[in-house]
Length: 170
Picture (cartoon, rainbow, N blue to C red):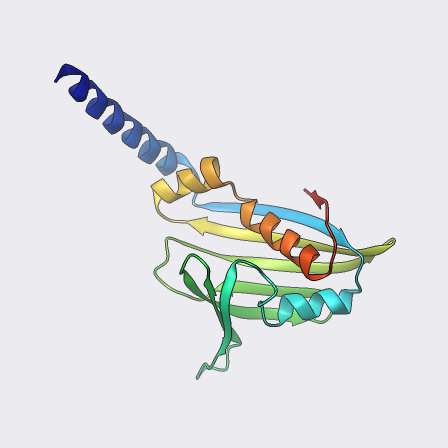
């Protein structure tokens, strides 16, 4: 019985520490990654701006009508999460800026994609300006998952879509 009580107290202390550390972390973060591709800016822009069916984590992608005239898309991932994104800015073939339009998520943010010719290929840089509201999710996002995980997966998938392995850079 004493061992069970010690284990329960230990778990409560760990949970309290996760909440406390998460509460001390800033809600906002900025993460950025880049990779170089043997593809033209136009080819990469078309993939990034268009249907996301080339991404292995996206199960379903669709354009969403909006009465206010916003350019909205909705993605459903393989883990069942559905998120709507708004295109804030698009300058073909060099940049795109999107934001999460779905409300009441434990996170939000914008993603800016910069596409530029560089030497033998084209460099794509993604910058995430994110906010994580829940302290537990903030802890997990910072220390377990990492802020770069989604960016890295996106850049790798873009490499697969263009038939190449890529090296990710800060």
